[in-house]
Image 1 (tube, rainbow, N blue to C red):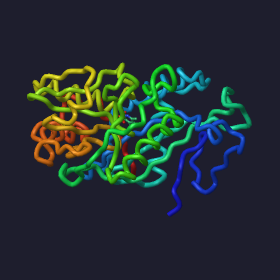
Image 2 (cartoon, rainbow, N blue to C red):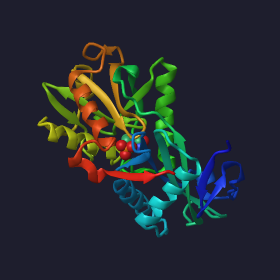
Image 3 (cartoon, rainbow, N blue to C red):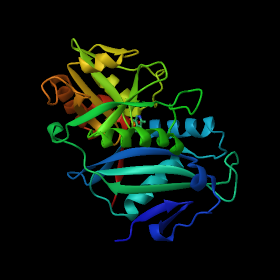
Image 4 (cartoon, rainbow, N blue to C red):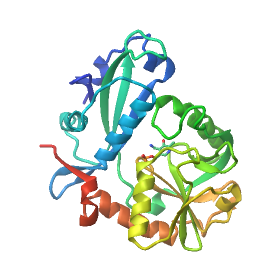
Length: 304
Ligand code: PMP
């Protein structure tokens, strides 16, 4: 079946998408976007979106920081996604991407003709953590910083930095990379945030360490606090990564991904560690709307 996408107020076939060859999005990667997960609940035949309001608010912040003039209500944001899910008859776990495209012939500093695009593709949620254990390297590429290209927002062009690091690590035989920031402290992965476990405490770089203001990072902090785990947000040294008991990535796409090796150092016993496993169990309950305390984070959509 031809994939259907939502573009500028209408559902269209992907192959019919047209965009100006001089558009700032095409020429300069000038896009603002959100990656959002919807989890399918087959008992009720509904899709359950995760933290939609927070994705919407971050989307607005990204637009604001790039000084893009585009008015959008939360209702329109939600409806655009729901139309895409329904049009594609999606009844499985899905990854939704909401992108603001600057179409039209315009310079990189212009506003172009802003158009909202939504795509939705099936993407299974990782239920068994030990299915995806990854090895990463600390890349020599430095994470972009607040004074250059702010990593705290979700902008297409930021991913040039991620691309360089990912290709660097893959060329050395690793699955992914961890960036240090300009100050030599741990920042984040190429598309995910980092958590470490030391002495039963959960530690993650604070928001001033050149990282995206990640929604999954915030989710994990909340889950851990709810479980009575001590959570510390602070600068992390590279060598702390090497001697951590557990390390994992978090992100909308990554969910929770255990890291079992960093450079030549094996982490824990090269499996998902106990704290990672407990947090993951709670995470799955919450994203699948099984925990009443966190139900405000779930948006239930009927797809029939
Ligand atoms: N950092 C980067 C660089 C990312 O691309 C992502 C994925 N969006 C994350 C962190 C995780 O962010 P979130 O939890 O909001 O998906």
